[in-house]
Image (cartoon, rainbow, N blue to C red; front, side):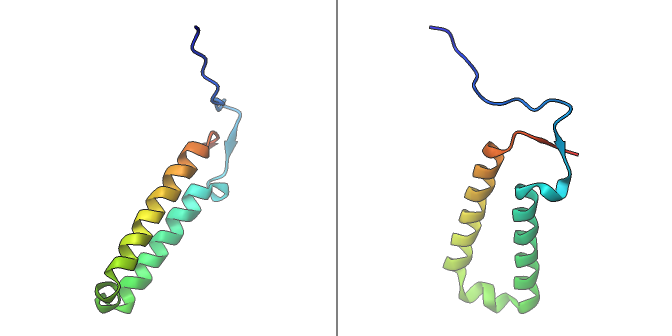
Length: 75
């Protein structure tokens, strides 16, 4: 039985601007949340360690899903 790669392949003509990338938006919002958490104080992070760990795990999952859903190059 032959193996077939059914994943779409981005060509050189398929380039989108970086601001249309969902992955970059998620990462930017994560960075902003981290900066706000740092500025708000380390007590906020220390008092909510379980919540912070869950949010970090969720962000990793979202990034992974978005990475596999992205086929277009960013220019």
